[in-house]
Length: 306
Image 1 (cartoon, rainbow, N blue to C red):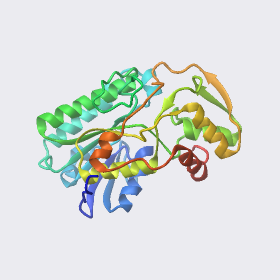
Image 2 (cartoon, rainbow, N blue to C red):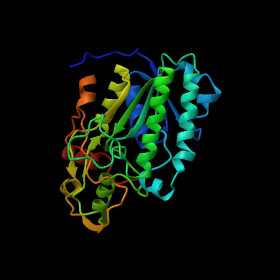
Image 3 (spheres, rainbow, N blue to C red):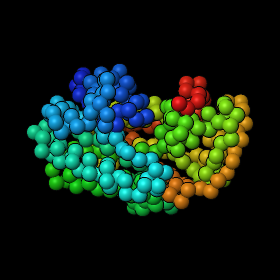
C-alpha cells in the first residue's frame, strides 16, 4: 500500500462551483482536515468569491491546489441545449488553464478536474472499465467532458501543469433540489416518503456505480495529499441494478414505491462498470460504504429533496 503523503497543515485550496452539491460536501470536509479552503462561484456572495478573481487578482499565486467542479450542464440539459458547454464551460476552462500556465506559481499549483465516470466511456463491453479504455461518449454531456479532458491533457503536456482528471461515478447521500433531473436515490426516497409516483427511465435493469459522498470526500483528500496527476476513476468499483436500488429505498423507508416506467433516455449509459484499481494502487483508497447502508444513512440524514 502506498505510504501516506502529508500536505502542509494549511494547504491552500480553492474550489470552483462552490455552490454545487459535490463542492458543498467537500468544502467543510477539507476545512475540518486542516485545509484552508476558498470557495469560488459565478456569483459572488457572502463567503464565496466570484470566479473572475482567478483572473483579476493574485489568487492563483497563493494556492497549492485548485479543484475545478464548476460546470453549467447536466446530461438532460445538455441534450436540450446542444453545444452549450462549447459556448460556456470549455472556453472558461481554456482561459483558466492559460492563466495557470502563465502564473509564476504553475510548478506548485495542483489542478484537479471533475469529469464523469460513466458518460465519457459510453457503452462498455461488460468488463470493469480502466482508465485506458476507449472513450466513446453517446451523449453531448459526455462528449463535452471528454473534450475538457483533452484540453487539460494538452496543457499538462505542453506547459508542465500538474493536473488530475477524476472520472467520478454516481455520488449520492446529499440533498438535491426536487426539480433537478439527476440523482435517482434522493428522488426515490422523496417519492416514497411523500407517497408520490416515481418515474423510472427504463425497466430497472440499468446498472450503475454509486459512491457515497463520505467515500468521495476521502478520495478527493487522497488526490490532494498524494498530489496525483493523470486520469483516475473515482468509484465504488461495483455495479447495482436500479431495481435493487429502489428495493433498498422501499425497505429503508418502509413504504413501497409507486413506479411509473418510461422509455430510457438515448443518451443515458445503461450499464457502467468502472475499475478503482488504479486509484487504489496510487493511494490505498477503497470505497467503504455499502450501498444498502448508504441509502439507509441517506434516509436518516436528508430525507426529502429541497
